[in-house]
Image (cartoon, rainbow, N blue to C red; front, side, top):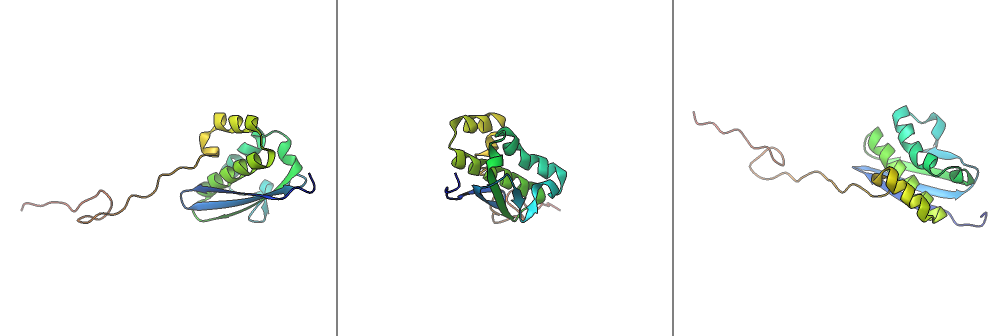
Length: 135
């Protein structure tokens, strides 16, 4: 495995975008240069750990480096989680791992296509209209 090329995976959630680079290593996970053990808040860290715990000890053979931008802390955590899961799948090429991820939570691999609805004329927002007055 030492000669294997790095794998790049992307995960998106709302406006947060995470890019993961997976290369052979010793199981070091860094998010924007911060080791996963020190990543705050703890709720986000637990969310990010899901694909790693599901893959067992397999992830300890690789180093994972994540860059994440945009969105809030939880959107970023979801994007990081998705990119790590996708990266591990493309690195190990395991159908068993894919089934395991899908069984746990489909959003670990499949993105959420929901976006903000466009504002329309005659109103303040997408659905809201100005109040009507008869007197």
